[in-house]
Amino acid sequence: MTMIAQTGAAPRLQTSLSVIILGATLAALATAPMWAGRAELRLLMEALSYLALAQMWNLLAGYTGLVSVGQQAFVGLGGYMFFGLAIFGGMGVLPALGLAAVGTAIIAIPTGWLAFRLNGAYFAIGTWVIAEVFRLGMAQVGSLGGGSGISLPVDVARSLADGRAEREMAMYYIAFAIGVASVALVWGLLRSRWGLAMTAIRDSELAAETVGVSTRRLKFMIYVLTAGFTALAGGFLFLQKLRITPDAAFSVNDWTAFVIFIVVIGGIGTIEGPIIGTVLFFALRQVAADWGTWYLMLMGVIAISVMLVDKRGIWGRIESLTGWHLLPVKRTLD
Amino acid sequence: MVWINSIVQGVMLGGLYALFAAGLSLMFGVMRFVNIAHGDFIVVGAYLILTFVVSWGLSPVLGVGMVLVLLAVAGYMNQRLLLNRVLGKDILPPILVTFGMSIIIQNGLLEVFSADSQKLQTGWLETTSVQLGDQFAVGLLPFLMFMTAVAVIGLLQFVFYKTPLGRMLRATSDDPEIVPLMGGNNAHTFALATGLASLVVGVAGIWLAMKTNFDPAAGPARLLFAFEAVIIGGLGNIWGTLLGGIILGVAQTVGAQVDAGYQILAGHLAFLLVLVIRPTGLFPKVSH
Image (cartoon, rainbow over all chains, first blue to last red; front, side, top):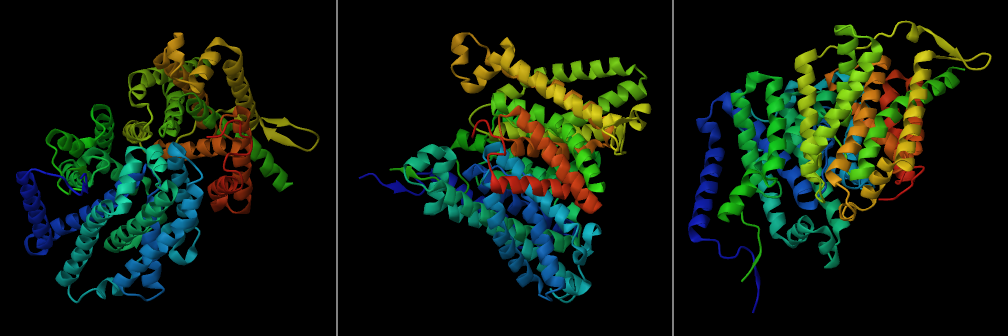
């Protein structure tokens, strides 16, 4: 009898190699506060937040074909909602972050309803317009500082833990949880029946619809889910910065362009791609930190080259050459 | 009177937005392709005219001619050598490649021209006004800008429906798989479409330089205005794009009349309102 098995017969060597790599990476990240200095810890926090942003954009664009150039809307909303809840709601850091994510997901329902009226490339620019509306609108909200922004009171950060070292450790573990959870969420989702439907949409939307996948509903669900998780990362990023302004919160370069570059260079439509992309992006940034605008131009050139040479990106290329899946989600017939 | 004035200003501004939008609309119409770097190419046009006329001191006529030729040739080459290679059913590669171009252009302009805001001074053009009726006058510059938009759109309409090039463009738009069987060369036709669109981008850039302040990061906002004008007017309808531009322009100037902070926001909200009421635009010709 033919059965659809989850992973098929991956060579045993590759499987054990995957387990070793994943285990070692997780162990290294989990113990980072013990071996990393303050600067490295901050870099890791940022990288883990970007990993979450990249996983979410990849889930949206790589699997459901919704190419959004407006994810900065949700980073910004998450940041502002977190600040609002912490400052005016008097909430602790963790509940405020969680509620900001849920609140943003709720706002994503009407914005998604609007954006879904546009197709393909027009959807992309439509999401950008919506993000601009939030940026310009937020600049008009006086209680959140208007155009010049607002700072997070010291008490809020202090409420995390006593002492500076403990606070930084607490912050780091929030970032660690967000980064790891984003990978786990996408992995779990792709191995569920939703994942089967999404993979079908990725491969051929028309065919998916013919075999009974309700593509529109699924896409909408993913759009709302990624909005919420993007907001969670956004809330954390601005907790780390301690200050938020409309231009920083809704920056298309910081929260969408870089994220797209990360996903495309690493490999779109794979879970491993955003991980590789994040590592490369931050490694390159460390090297090229003082190149200024040249660094950004280099990123653009690399992204264009990937599209011209092999649009599957680095991981897509490795996968097709070796058949290796670090985090297997493929279903094969045995 | 203040309101009538801001509406008239908005109509003139709408001409500029229609110029922004015409190139975008043309490329989408022929290739189903949205150029994310569209606004950045407009800004390149603005910097070129500034360089030719102000820095090099060339005569304005020569400067305008050079900008148009340069952009048209660059557009043709860009499509032929680069963009054609990523066209296809998958919408992601063209979006990503033009997104990458947008970042490269913005940072390249920043490197060459610095972040300072620029404007092309036009002397008497700016201070002269045109009397419309007894108690009404508009500036000569906005008036000429609006008339340029009408002329460009009329010309595009003519090229599209009355010339062999237009026939080729329409045929390729209708069925890009059949045209090569009839001896057409899609790669060349697509490149001609982008060349023509880039010519209009040049015109738009020159007017941008004369009408408003601009800086290296001004591109994305122009892309959004162009896009909104296209969607408000309705896809595939080139006169609709002019009307879309006008609606956007009027929404912005009326918004600015209420509060300076609302100018851009009011334009975006007008666009979203149209999206709610008529997702296919106000004057659609084809639906996608």
